[in-house]
Image (tube, rainbow, N blue to C red; front, top):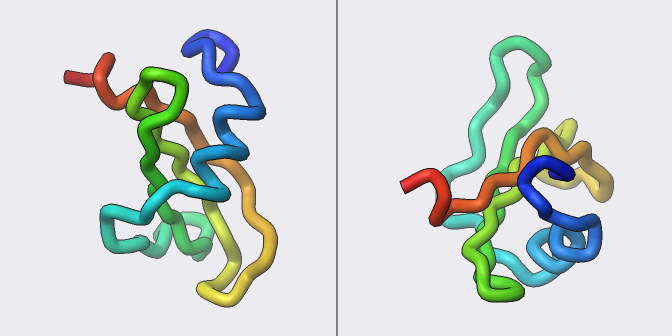
Length: 72
């Protein structure tokens, strides 16, 4: 996140207010469910990939943070 200049506050904003625009997928290595949440925040289109143990989990681990416009 640091090298992409994506702060914790931006990550929290995406996780709290973002939308899941892709179908969550099971990670074949870990067995965790990976969800990609997206949101336009602070003038940037960001995506946060978070891994959770199940679809009813209340906690997760941030896998990566992506600035979508930079990817194009």
